[in-house]
Image 1 (cartoon, helix red, strand yellow):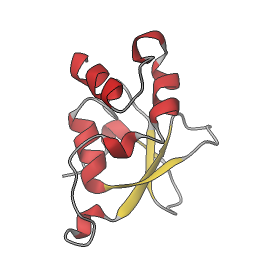
Image 2 (cartoon, rainbow, N blue to C red):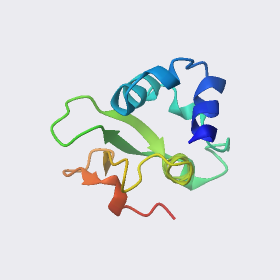
Image 3 (cartoon, rainbow, N blue to C red):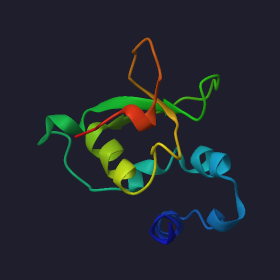
Image 4 (cartoon, rainbow, N blue to C red):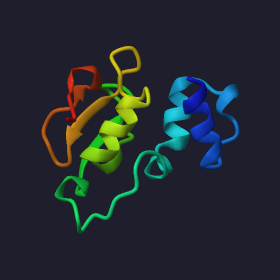
Length: 105
């Protein structure tokens, strides 16, 4: 948890200790590209932006698109776990699924 807070602060989100999980995901959703490993899109087909998410099933705000590598990195860092679920789908897909049930690797 401390590492996640430090990473949020490193991307300029300094209110991390004063917001709810939902607010944190909403506020940082636009900045999540700064987290995880940096790789060149042209060199790795897994870097194509193929995932999007929303905070809950009925939410109209959709964040993304993000690559499989980005999503896997964030899941390893504690985002999108069974305890901290969001709803994910492939870009343009018909159904959002709970993030705790998706394996990115």
